[in-house]
Image 1 (cartoon, helix red, strand yellow):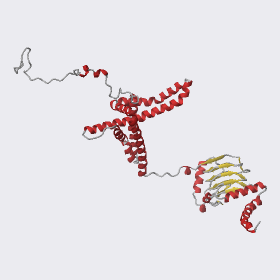
Image 2 (cartoon, rainbow, N blue to C red; image 1 turned 90 degrees about the horizontal axis):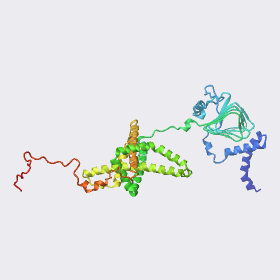
Image 3 (cartoon, helix red, strand yellow; image 1 turned 45 degrees about the vertical axis):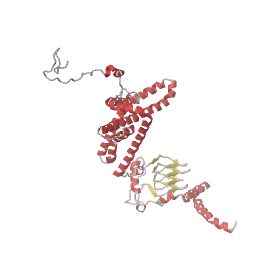
Image 4 (cartoon, helix red, strand yellow; image 1 turned 120 degrees about the vertical axis):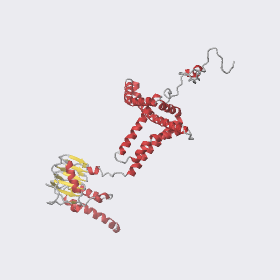
Length: 423
C-alpha cells in the first residue's frame, strides 16, 4: 500500500476503532459487537438531521420539590398523559421529575444487551432502544420504543405520540400506543370575517356558475322540455309543490321496490348495477332540471313584467335563466356577506336552505307532472279540440252579452214604427 493511500484511509481506520473498541469492552458475543457497532453507525449516519431537534441525552434530576409521576400503574393513561405533558413543557435546564422506584431520561436512551435496569423508566423527547432487560414499566413521550432481539421488559410498555416496534424483543405486560390530545387537536384560530366572506363567496359563486352552465346547455339542447316544465311551474305551482313533496317521500320506497323486483329474476340481477346508475341519473336530472325550470319561470315572469312597464328588453331563455338564478341565489348571497354574524348568520343560513328546498321541491314536482317536459297537460298550453270549432268560437258567451240600458219611455210597442219616421 502506498504512503498517500494509507494517509487517506487513516481516518476510516480510526473511526472503526472508536466504534469497535467500546463494544468489545462490554460484549460477550460477536453478535453483540456487530449490533452495537450498527447502532453507533445509525446515530452518526448522514441524513439524521432530524435528530438535531431532539434534546441532548441526559438524566432528569429529581428533588424534593420536583413533580412526582407514578409509573407503577399504567391503567389510567389519560391522567398520566396530563402529568407528563405538564412536565415536558418545562425547559430542559429547569426540568425536575421524581419517578418513585424508577428514573426519567431526556433524549434518546439505550439499554445495552448486557445491562439490566431495575425500576420504571420514562423517556422524554427521545427514542428508547432496549437491547437488554428492564424490570419495570417503560413509558416514552414524543418518541418511539424499539425492543430489539434479546430485549425483555417485565412490565407494561406505553408510548405517547410514538410507536412501539417489537423487533424480536419480549414484553410480559401490555403494549399500547396513545396520541396526545394536544398533538391531535392544535389550537384552532378563529377565521376573520373577511376570510369567512371570501370562502363563502367562492363556494356560492362556484355553485352559481355550475348551475348556469347546466342551464345554458339545457337551453341549447333541450329548450322545449325546459319551457314545458317552466310553464308547468307557473300554471300549477301548488300542485307541483305537493307532487314534489310526495316524490321526495317515495324516492327510497320506489327504489327499493325496483331492486326487489329485479332480484326475483336471474336477468334482473344482472341488470341491477345499470338500473341503479340510471335511477340515480334520472333523479339528479329531475332535481337539477326542475330547479332550472323554476329559475326559468321566475326570470320569464320578471322580464315580462318589466316589458309591460315599457322597458325595452330581449325576451329569451338565456335571460330568463340568468334573472331567475340570480333571484334564487339572492338569499345565499346575503348569507355570504353576513353569515359571520353570531346567531344572525345561522338564521340566514336556515332561511336560504329553506327557500332553496321549497323551490327545488316545486321544480321536482313540475318535472314529474310534465314527465320531464314531454307532457303539456299541466303547463296551461292544452286546448281541447272542441275549442277550435266554429260553434265554439262564435258561440254566445256563457253569461251572455251585457246590453246597454234603454232610455225610459222609448220601449217600442208591437206593430209601432220607429219615431224617426223611417219605414
